[in-house]
Length: 469
Image (cartoon, rainbow, N blue to C red; front, side, top):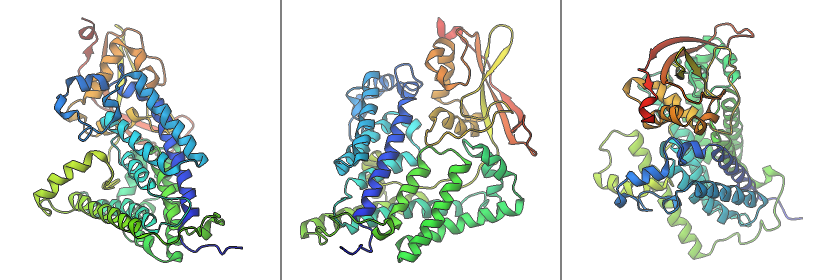
């Protein structure tokens, strides 16, 4: 019997490939349900219209990396996603894993680029970054350098998020107040968040400071000996399970959990592929290529971190110029989740006027009526619902294009956006307006109320006749 290797090797790689394929599959299925309303011809930010209005000189694959440049039709949008689903299925089975990872990353980059702000979340970038790294991850032999780079990615995720919290202009992680607001103001909380929010003040203050410890100190164990890594894995996994239980962040938490596999050794997975002993020493050419790639990845990650967290002007202008050439590809990113916690939850309610009264229309997954229980949605990420959370934070600064488009669609083409709402939209409303509400969890829960709502502002009505002329 062959001895079980005591390093992160083929067994770890095999498990991670399948987990990453599952995450990609979930991301593709989630996107399939909403691509039409996002960037389809009847969507809020139609890709064909955007390309028609954009300077042709800017529509190069280098500056706008998407295969949809050459086929932006609705048919192509669906066909590309179905290709992504098929590739993920083949990847899960175990065929051509590295090729599947590369094609998946390139294809997802295409949709993330084409969808613009709808797929511009940090976890979208992390999915692309992980896919590119996975293209260099063999399943049939040891490749220590790429396993180390995955640990670097995991290290960046947690440490950079910790640095962002440490630098919070509110000081809310230092004074312990951050978690007193977090559960109530997270973009899409679950019903468990209500119970977590109701915990004592002293617990929330302890949570806030523990998160700083978890993100600033614990990640250093990622590069430690096995015992330190196993402890780190347990702590970070518990952290992500709390995130899954209390809020909906699409596939982010599941992707993070998949990356935790690199904190394990092959012996921790209780299996050893028959090929684990194959080619344990890399040839000189492969070693040189690996060293070059690893140096570039770590170097660019360092540059990105300096731009994100150091004072402006720390790096020469030449770095900023060079940075503009690789940033559109999202291969190297920074992660700074929840640098500070929002203290208000302002939700946007859409109302239509039928000539007699204003009727509210609530999106499927956002807080609506006070009696609506916050749902579990992840790993699906409803992009419009999520984006409207950001709009609520800054509604006084103006109305973004996609919100204006949503109002127009409700007026003249309600079927195009009807699936976003929990109830069907009227066929021909006379006007549409936006009403902004401050939402708070109820202090004591009963069977009828989860939220307390206070109206804070109302937009000017938009007459639908202006779109029908």
